[in-house]
Image (cartoon, rainbow, N blue to C red; front, side, top):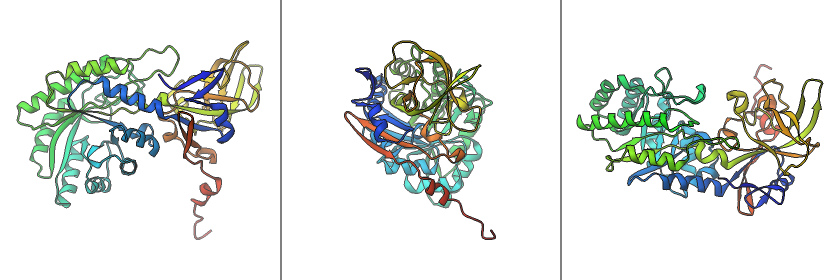
Length: 419
């Protein structure tokens, strides 16, 4: 459930009509619902019946400071994959001790920064990274907490580009090769091996891959404890899918929580960490765009809007489908249209052959479920400006990221001294 609904025939973000927002904020823009973000976090938190847990929001889904702050105020930690994301989490008020530093390619500089600010632990993804982290920690004359991220060789049955738990993927340590690396970690003086972690992918729409992976990881954790490793936590990652289209069936947080609670039933003394991103943010945000023109040809009809693939790249990159609706609830005749943007790429298409009433120039369309992997993946391709982001709460809203100006974009370029 989200708080983007029709009232008196007009689509609202919480209690504010989106067509009103589109007169006050330049289109295109992202609009997030504060109450939806809170609701999604609380549902997941209440669904996981474990005595010791920490939900670390995955900043890669949406790293706007106001979004992070909303979750920090609820007690969330942060799952980060770069120095920049660490800085964002700290700026939003998340304690360093509740930050998990993940990622397959951390630089030595990023490691030093993370150690200096006191992040809770590192998810280490290879024996090579383990050696690097040992050397960096030794140079700083300190010790750091780590978990080894295990690749359980489980196919998440999601899009190939967002599957991360198969043995051929770049992520984690293959489970069949893990024990010698655990032994190696135990010998290092400047790393404290206190956990084991996994993450098998994103937009997972079946519980079975989770079950297959979690059973393997918990069995491994039990074996490690029997071998004398003092594990304090198990990080089960994120990946729970969301419905992008009306009627799309995906497991709900309650079912996910029940699965986790059952699998972890005999490990009540250990802390479990979860790293949701999309599950919290996808349906908490929409992309609002204006119709530029309707182009009709002998072969297809196009609605050209002012949003483009540089604003929301998911359809072009992943063939993702977002429900697209008019801000005014439609009745009467509809026709088939392709919804396209102005970018000079054939792939700049949001949808093909969808049924809509024919719009007029200036009408407002809304791409739903755009709160995750939208703004964070946007670019200035074609020298298009990064767009505004706003957050609505009840009957108020705030601009939480100002759109760039052309002057700001151009000023970043430096003419070479010989020119």
